[in-house]
Image 1 (cartoon, rainbow, N blue to C red):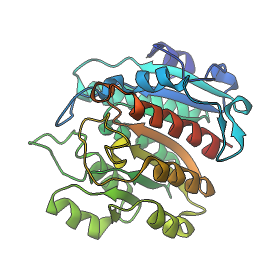
Image 2: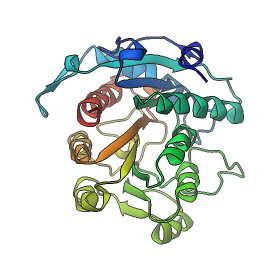
Image 3: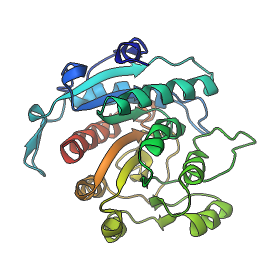
Image 4: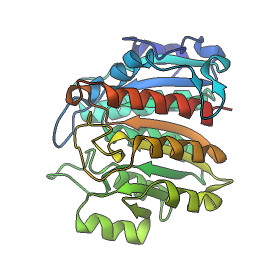
Length: 291
C-alpha cells in the first residue's frame, strides 16, 4: 500500500495543533482510529480522536516540563481512518494495513483511539520489524481475557493477544487494578504486571528496557476518573494526571518506536478535561519520543 492509498483511507475532521507538515516531510504522524465496536460497557470512544484534536488548541505548544516546543518538530495529522462501521474483522485489517504503511515510511506513529482492541493490529508490523520488541502498557484493566462473552476480538482481550504474539515476559503492565483471577494468574506467569502503581515501578524497570525497541500503549483509564472521567469503563483508584505525564517523560530514556493513546470517550465528560489531558500527553509524547 502506498502513502497515497493511506491518505485515501482517512478523513480529516480536524487537525491536532501544529500537525500540518506535509506527510513526506514529517518525522511523526498522528492517525486517529475511530473504532468502538467491542466495548463492554459504555460506547463513545470512536469520537476520542476528534475530541483530542478539538481541545488541543487550548494548550500551549511549549512544554514547561521539557523546555521544548512543538513548533520545532515536523509532524503530520493524517486524520481518522475510514473504517467499515460495525465490521470488526475488516476494520482490524484496515488498521493493520495503515500502521504497516506508516512503519514502512519510517515515520514515528502516534495513534489515537478508539477502543483498546485497535492496539493489536497496530502492533503487528512492529512485531515483524523489531524481533526484540517490548510493550509498555498503562491501564486500569489487565485486558488479558481469552474472550469476552465468547468473543475473542474485544477490548478486554487485547493484551492477551499481544502477550501471546510477543512471547513471555515482553509485556510490562502498570496501573492495573481490575481483572479476573485468571487474568492475574496469566500475568504472573507471562508478563510483568504491577497492581495499581505506575511511576516508581516503571522507573525500576527502565534499565532492563534500555537498548530494546519499545511500543507504548496508554489507556486513559489508567488515570483516576477524578482526573479523567471521559472513558467508557471508569475504575476508581488510579494514578493522577501529573503521574502519568511524568511516566511519559521517564520513557524518553528508551528507544520508543510507537505510541498509542486509547479509550477517550468525550460523551462521558462534558468538561472535556479528559480530552485536554490526552492532548497534553500527546504533546509530551511527541516532544519525548520523536528524535
